[in-house]
Each structure stands twice: as structure tokens, then as C-alpha cells.
Length: 301
Image (cartoon, rainbow, N blue to C red; front, side):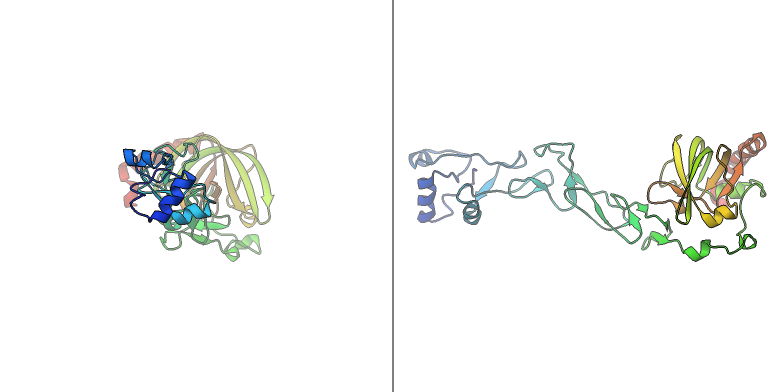
């Protein structure tokens, strides 16, 4: 390990140690004096992030007399004795070799979901607030829903609000019994057409797998929906109330809000979602509604 002006920094006792054990601690420039001393030269091992290093006698002793070099002025957002790990605010990109200039990536912590902009320097995992999950803290945990608060972006779904002792207590539902209006369309973040493929129950929830065939709207969308199989969660109480009413093998028009996004990238459907069986009448009404929403401007409704 090469160190800058090392011989001038330490006393003769250390110099004797260096000469006797043939350990280099010197600058990149090899002059005649160093050659006469009989010192062997070892280059800095800073993973191509620096060409400067110092000799540290404590490090030398701790290494068992093998090496005492410590890199300094590490570039490319690296740090450490050998510039071999990322500095605070950055994490290791495992697709790049350690000597690459792109070995360290900046932390991408969500400004609302994380407790700060610093992440794990190895994995990139940010420290999430309560109810928040994901590598960058941008998703809500199971049984949490997104809120409009920057302080608590994910709040727990209160179970009592989803429990109805009798069908008579079921909430007012936005479904087939209500027509599709421009206001209802504009109040939702997503509008998709999909076919229900399956249903499985998990404790107090039913999970529906839906094959999305058309995407009409995803404004303010936190998660982009593609033409693929998408998971939707409905509480068993809402299933009992048929709010929404979903049957396997049927196609539906689904309008929903993004605030109820789940942590695994799926969504919750409830009485605030607009779900109606797909048919030509609904298709015609949807096209008319989309045209009106453009001319009337959703933001004003």
C-alpha cells in the first residue's frame, strides 16, 4: 500500500520497522533515497476510487504486521479503508463491480413513507414509518390504507368499520344500481375492465385475481396497472353485502381510488369503489363519460 510522504511523518523507530520488515509506506513517486533504503513498494489498493493513502501504525498492528495503508479522499461516493463500501446516503449496486464508478447508488427513500433519506448501505433498504413497507418505503402494509397525511402516509384500517352484523347494515354501494356519472368517474384514480379468474379467502378477507384487459384511467396513480393479472382484496363483510359484487368468470368495469393500495402492489375494493357488470350498454356509457370528463375537466368537479 502506497502512502503519501509517509517516511517524513513518523519517527526513526517506525522507519526501522518499515525497512526491516520491507513494508512500503511511501508516495507514488519513487526517488533514489527510498531505493537506497531498500524499501519494497506496494501500490494503493483503493479499488480505483482513489490514488492516495496513508500509513496507519494502529491499522498495521491490528493487521498483524501485514498492512497499514488506509485510503483517503475516496471518490464516486465510496468510503472505507479500501474505498470498498458506500458512504452515507448511498448503497451498493450489486450489478456493478466494486471498482466501477457506478458501484454506489443514491438512496431513493420516499419523502413521505421513510423516516429519512439514509438507507442501508448494502441493501438500499430505507427505514419506513409505521404501516409503510417496500425497499423505498412507498407502499402500505397489509390492512393499512394510504392517507393524505405526509406525517402518517399509511393508516390502519379499523376493523369495526368493516363489520356489519346484518345485511340491513350494509353500506351504500356504488354498483349496478347506480349509473356511471362524470363525477363518479373523476373521483376515482383508476378505471379498468377485467375478468374475475379466482377467489381465495384469507381470515377476514377475500382475494380476487382479475385479468385486466383494458385500462381507461390511472391518474395520480402510485402503482401503474398493466394488462396482466391483478389482485384485489375485499373484506368478507363487504362480500356478504355484495359490495362490490364479483363472480368468477364475469367481466366488470372497476373504478377505484388509489388511497387504498395494499403493500403487495394489489388494491382494496370497498363500498367506495364503483363496480358494475360489463356489457355493451356500460361500454357506451363509459365512452360518453370519458368524453364529458375531458370537456368538463375532472379537476373542477
